[in-house]
Structure formats: structure tokens, C-alpha cells
Image (tube, rainbow, N blue to C red):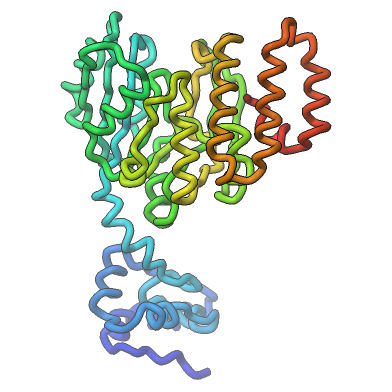
Length: 375
């Protein structure tokens, strides 16, 4: 059978030994493959093949017959060289990620949160911890950490500020290409969380925001629930008005997009700064959720009172009205939020929960069960 033509003499000599070993092992049905290192692949692709990318890919995608004959010039057989991933590796090592951690009186949990960041495989981080005038041992713990690791920068507010103003202040101090958020009582479970998210954003330049699945626990660390949110952009857009689909401690987003949108909206009085920002980001770029449980979210202390829940629902109604023309399912999302507001306004609403649930499912269908169970 005619052998594939080697278009470049240099590659032929570089691969001569591999080809010979392949012929030698053919009778025993063995394939002694010496896979080139990443650095070797980049060097050979740069200097040994001075022609177009498409021709390189065509040359490297060998047939199965060539594979059996031992041709393993640049990459593993039956696998094309992924130039985008190779080009991205050097860049990723240079992309600084700023981790923003606002803190207030969290002496029992702040150390665990910081340790989960320090354990990340992605090392090019700066950790901005901004203390909002804590009166416990939190400032002392933060000072000790800043001495241990130069990547940790501790900032103290001169006076107690709102969360939104604290976040904007911390981000203005930061210098990273990407921004990651972490609450002072949450932790990152996977040591490769940031690496996975940055890799995705580098490979998909049209995406501006990426989240993950979360595990909710109580104050004793006992698991309450697990949540995987809609993954693909079109899935997220379809139900974006029903609820916030990104957990704050799980996200990584682009700094330039954040700045172009004006940062967090400081006019919001009852939280929702994250939901409002994600809604704005969805108008200028794509969004994605990693289908893995990479973050532990502590629910204790974050449960809303009945009065505050009504305020949050009213805020959601205003956000739905504001962005209704930009996202699908405006009518259903508005009707559902109003229904929730009425339900939480009723006395003894827990008694009416079974009836409320049946009415909700009958009117809104499976979308309610799948995406709004945690509202």
C-alpha cells in the first residue's frame, strides 16, 4: 500500500525512529507510541510546518492504516492538533484572576474560605479581602493571612458600607483580567474550579460569565441540597426572568464587561445586585454554567424573613419589568412573581402550600418545578 507523503523533510527525519519502531512492532500488533511533549509540538508546528493551519490539521489527521504503520509525527494518532488550546496555554498562565471576598464578622469561617482559594491549581491569583468594619477577630485573622501569602490584599473600610458599595470598591482596587466572587462563609470544593472556568472563557471569547453547580449546607456543614442550574446559554436565556441562575460564590466573569456595564447597581436597596448584573451581562454576551458541584454554599444566616422575602420578590418584579423586553417568557415570569408575592403576604401561608403548589404547576408547568423550586 502506498505510504502517505511526508511534505517536510525535517519532520521525516525527526520521525524516522518512530516509523521504524512502528514497522518493527507491526507483526506483534504493537504500536510503540512516543507522544511528543506539548513544548515539542509547539516548536515543531511553529518552525517545521511553515504553511496554513488547515493544511497542518489535514496533514496531522492520519488514516487508520498510517496509524498501524507507526506514523506518529507530531500528535497522537487519530487525533488532530488543537491549535486553539495550545495557543491558549501560555496566555492562561498570564491571565490574572482577582478573587473578591467581602467580609464582616466571620471569624469562624473566613479562614476556610481563604484556604479554598489558596488550594486552587490556578496560581496566578490576587485575593482582595475587604473587611467591612468587623468587631470580632476577623481583622486579626486577615492580617495573619496577608503576611503568609503576598497574593492576599486586605482592605479595611473606613466605615460600614453596603455590600454593593463594598464590592465595587474591591473590584476597583483589583487588577485581574477575570473577576471571581466568594462569600466569607462559602468555600470552593474543587481545586481546579478557577482553572476550569478560565479555560472555558479563554476558549470561548463570546462568553462573559460562567457559574457552577452548588451544594447547600447548614451551619454545621450538613448537606441540605444540590443544585445544577441550566447549563447552555439558550437554556439560561429561556428562564432568566424566573430566577437568578448564578450563585455569587460560583461565578467568574470578565473585568472589561463588568466595567463597560458600570459595575454593580448601587441604587438597589434590597440585594439583587448580582441578579441585576447577570441580566445586563446576558444582553452583551453569552453565559454558561459548569455542570459540576464546585462550590459549597452555606445557607444559615441567609434565610430571609417573611418581610424581607416580600421585599426581594417586589425587587424581582421590578427587575422583570425592566428587562422583560430583552428576555423571553416575560408574561409567565411576571405572573409567577406576583403569585409568590401574594402567597407570602397571606397569613398562615404554610397551610396553603399544597394548594399553592398545585395551582403553580397547573398554570406554569414543568418550568416552575425545574427552575424555581428554590425561590
